[in-house]
Length: 141
Length: 141
DNA sequence: TTTGGAATTGCGAACGGTTTGCAGTATGAT
DNA sequence: ATCATACTGCAAACCGTTCGCAATTCCAAA
Image (cartoon, rainbow over all chains, first blue to last red; front, side, top):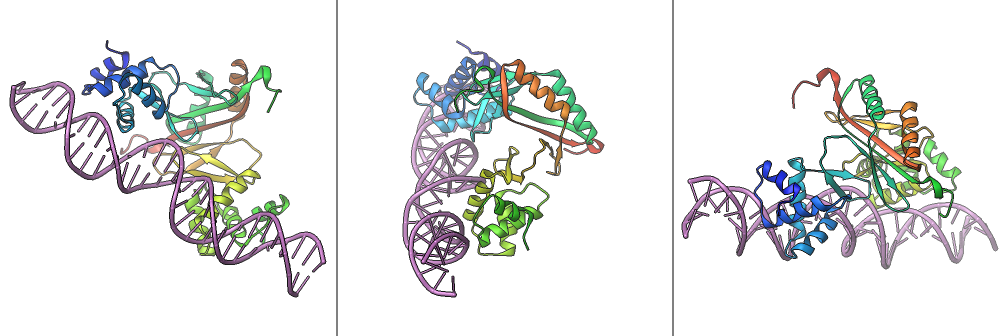
């Protein structure tokens, strides 16, 4: 079976090896923001002969052809998500580690304005919000 | 001479050693966002016997007592700035590496709203904008 | 002021995430 | 099927950062 990402890779003209097929599969199935070790773990369940070096190399490759995007959530390792046209950002639940994606046109507009006022054209940006659930914000530590 | 940061450290009750005095001096004089290696380089010019391990330890200490703040600009190493009450963010000039600080009340308001709408209370956040100067945005690579 | 114990330092080794050199293997255009 | 090229696995190297340890420094109390 050809996974969504595998199809994308073929479109981009990448040589599809067994390892890459498995990694594409794993990433197609993921609905979270796995780091390389996690991708390797999941890939190894499908084919245990995949080395972590290959996962690192493949992630970089997929990033280069813009099939996936690196997300730096400040925890010291690279996380990834499927590339998408829409700008979005992340809210990280510091209690549970859950990551919520959100988009905000107003935010984008203000950002543009700020850059313009400073005499700059935006080539990239990132926003992360760390938060705790409102309904138990007062509890515990 | 007692530097601004040294005074702050004394207020916080830190034991002031020669090394810490020098590092406080360096940080008081800095108007940029040096990384640890750069702080060490500058400190070593004042007293060459300061080891980089001590700089690492001191930066962490100063961060813990909120005299300085760590800034993660996505370049793989920690950068620092003096702690300040006002929220601000960074625009990084990707051509020159220059870092411009800015604040925006509208931005803060929208951020709060986004979090509230998602059911969260903000405990931290960060925004970075990467840009190129408008007046030569079309030139070069 | 000298003293003593706790805190700090410098060194080098270890760390965790990531990259790389190399020899062997698989891929897919011919 | 063939073959050059690209990819893989392994282990070693990398880079920013932390840590264990013995030696040194600080500073509060005498």
